[in-house]
Length: 320
Image 1 (cartoon, rainbow, N blue to C red):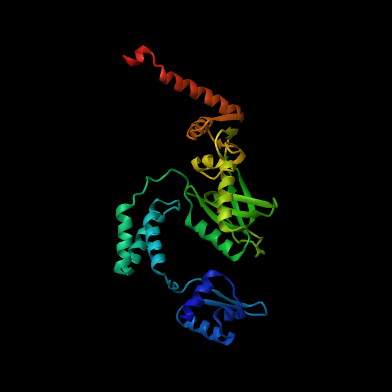
Image 2 (cartoon, rainbow, N blue to C red):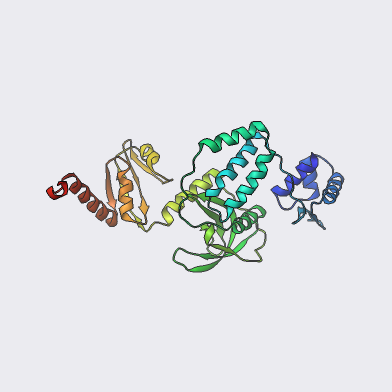
């Protein structure tokens, strides 16, 4: 059991000193050296680094370390593989089917029934159109995040311009079927969010870095979603809605910052690539609103209102 815990530590972090491992496992450094030798005899490549700052890391190659999963984790893995075919990672469908067949073969009967119940009654919506991400890019970025290593890559913007970036990577965030990298851009000295499908990693990567303080992961994901809602808009508007802020927040499809102006009024700055779509989305709020600033939205609302008004008063030739 201690060897399995040691393998788990090696997978959780790249570098460990003997004293750190000994403290985690409540054993001596001599025992750690013996356990490392046992892992090597079993086929696991554990690399040693000499010197005062030396230690151990799990090398590449060798055998795949075993996984210890409880019942809920095993079901989650099987269900995740089942739904991965409609995911946003290039070429994942066929690989997921092969992995699912292996996992289901090992599941006890009670867990297999839980997975089959999900498969029998859960439906997948048709896959959305959009760019998918090479799994190699995702693993490269995730490894750099885990090991606190700077990442160098070419980045293609929405208009096709390619720039070279050097960043401190921190988190991968999945939002609306796309993957995004949250990183500290060393050249711009600020936080940036990058679409992973537009990232082309370069080798070698950069040096190790000391991680900066971060908020909790749920706040990171919410913040990234909020920035994405505003960063890619071609058209924006300032709108006052004559309804409580909580009511408006619940009816919006994505995270948006809303400023209460009183018990029954609030303000926010919605946006869209098309003012017509923005006008339609505001209509779905089912509340009165006033456009404070946004000429494109005002024009789109005028056209839409005229069209709806004509629909309510059809010409005679349309009826016959």
